[in-house]
Image (cartoon, rainbow, N blue to C red):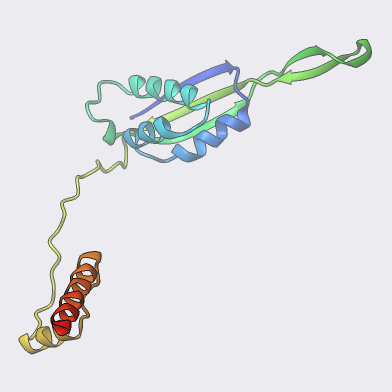
Amino acid sequence: MEARAIARFVRYAPRKVNQVLTVIRNQRVDKAFEILSFLPKNATELVEKVLKSAVANAGKLKDLSSIKIKEAWVGQGPTLKRMRPGPMGRGLGYKRKTSHLTIIVTDEGVVPAKRKKKAAAVKAPVAPAEVAATEEKAPAKKTRKTAVKKTAKKAEKKETAEK
């Protein structure tokens, strides 16, 4: 089942909204909400609001991981033309862009997320002679404690040699 939500005439530039949409397109809804919570863009508030509306329009679905974002796009709305004072009494124009945002969610072809269990690493059986050979070859890892112990032993040897 598909559901859609549309936000029209919103005061965000379409280019900036599209940057957010490219990140969440074709994602599961629960994953998309997680991504949106960490994106450092102002347009995430708008996209999150429209995505919540699309999920609500989908009906009484219990699990957000069973819904995915099928399509998400943004179109250019009307441009608001404004004036700002410029030098020598002139007026300089600037444009405030608006956009129309559409998000379509679906529950078709979505595999719910499964929790991964940590599998125990399976190692190939090793002959005891090989294990002993590898243990002998491995050098001892030097740490600060072993270095201190060695210097203490050297100092003791010098003291006993002097006596």
